[in-house]
Amino acid sequence: MRYTPSGMPLIDCVLLHVSEISEAGQSRQVELEAPAIAFEGVAQRLAASALDETYRFTGFLANRSRRSKRTVFHITQFE
Image (tube, rainbow, N blue to C red; front, top):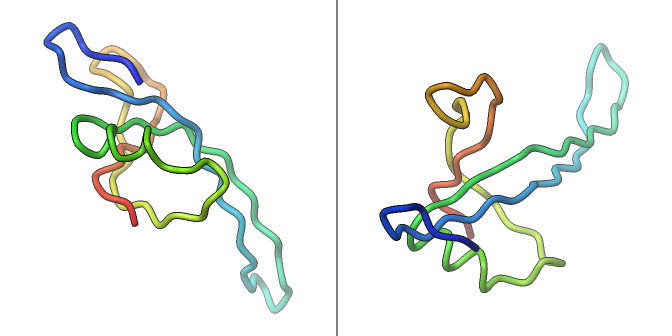
């Protein structure tokens, strides 16, 4: 975890998604790694969470910053 210049807690991480879905009548294994970011209380909770657990994340996709074209998942909640 790190802090923004204004002192807000921030955590950068990578989420791993694994699932199986049906596509065109066939079963398909899906794996995806996505860069993610969380702020304030969510960042503090995430930093204290175990890495080897499964979580359900809620959030939105957006550019990392105004000048960046890199997409990142902004975590707003997790359980």
